[in-house]
Image 1 (cartoon, rainbow, N blue to C red):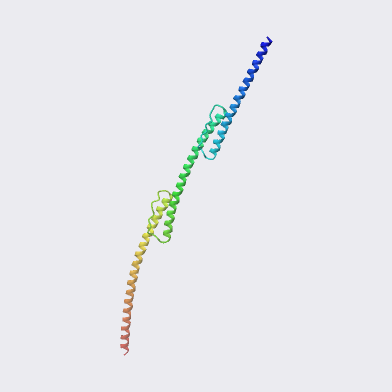
Image 2: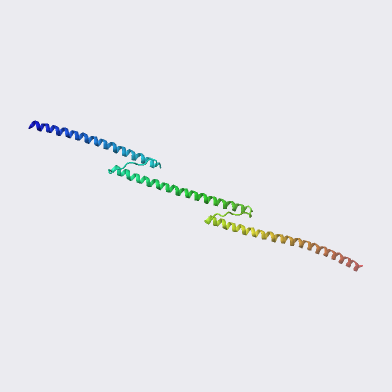
Length: 193
């Protein structure tokens, strides 16, 4: 009986040693897998922090590291989508700013031309926004100035013609007055004699 018991004890000891060795192998394998998953998570997280989304996070599973991997993968996809939307919005804003600058430059060029005395300009249609409305109002002002200058020119020509006529009439009156003065002098001279 003691021999059987001793043999059974040895068998159980060997069995426990085998199970412990197997458990240590599994633990070592799990540690290697966990280290691999953590390394992948860190690698992808570092790339994402530099806006490099070329490597997808493949860590999945029911354990805490797998759930962390799945959560981070979702977060990284949402972050990439948000950054893409932000980049599109920034591009639209840049294009809008460029368009506004172009319009302001056109209006400024026209204002400078008017300031230099050029009233024969045509302002292009710049749209219905505030700058377009300013350009439209500026076109109306330039057109009004053109009309006023045309009227001033016409009045000036009329006044110039009238002045020339007045000058001629004045000369004729002066000549007539001189003639009458001479006649009067002759008459006065004749009377004195």
